Structure formats: structure tokens, C-alpha cells
Image (cartoon, rainbow, N blue to C red; front, side, top):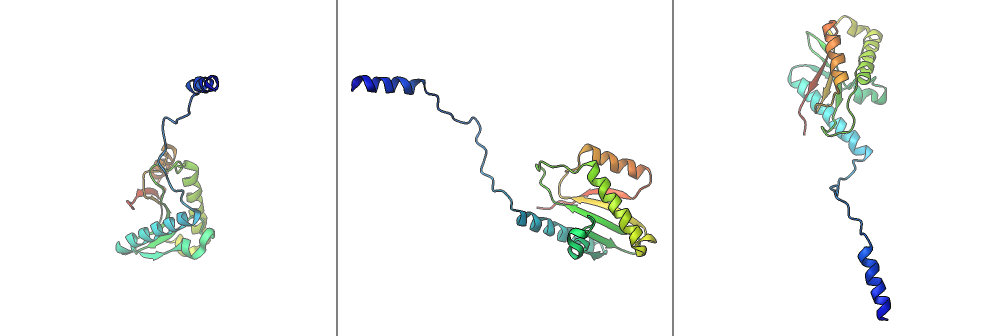
Length: 161
């Protein structure tokens, strides 16, 4: 019996026990429904922000759902109309808004204005609003270039917690 115990002790001395060097903190995954609610709440917040600036608000995304062409809010006053897309991503979110996303939104806004004559005569601006600095360098460069060409497109961060 003593011989068997000695063999077991020898084997346990050479056995490596795996222990991770870094243990990630527990993080609850956000469900799809929670993401939708989070985005809708940010859109309401942005709508209220422009309402307080005396704009008439049309919650375009709420009315048309997935067929909203990316236009979440239309803010109108006597001087201008703003077509707004809202993104409420965390700063540490793995996805960034890229040039192709801004370009697609801009083209959707141009189509929207061309298909809705009541907006053609107005001073219409395009605005991409986020809760954090989540545009990549290419997207920021694209907006800057379009503004230099005289196009009415901009990007704004509105803090939201």
C-alpha cells in the first residue's frame, strides 16, 4: 500500500494545474430587447434635447421602424431642418462607426429629401449623434471633407448615461 501512495504523490508533484493569469470580470450580456430599449431611450433623449432648443420634433424612426432609412429624428425650426441618426454605443464598444456607415446615412438622407418635396425647399442638414466618441478616423475625415465641399453634414456627441 505504501508503494501505491508514493507513486500517487510523485504524480501529483509533476502535474500542472491550469490557473488563468487573468480572470475577466463577470459581465452580463445585453439582450437584443435591452439594446433596442437603450437605443430608443437615447433617441427620446436627443428628441427632448432639440425640443428644448425650440425645434418641432418628428420621431421618424418610431413612426417608420426599420423602414426609416436610418433617420431617427427630424428636427424642424424656421431656419433649418435636421435629419438625425442616433447611436448609443459604449466607449469601449468593439464596433466603431466607419466611413461607409456615414456615407450610407448621407445617401439615405439625400434620397429622403428628393422623395419628399416639402424638404427640398428647406435648409436641410444631416447630423450623426452619438453618446460617445465612436467614429473611426475614416468617418471623421469623410465628414470633414464633405463639410469643406459645402455639404451640410456634421457629427455631434451628446453625453448620455
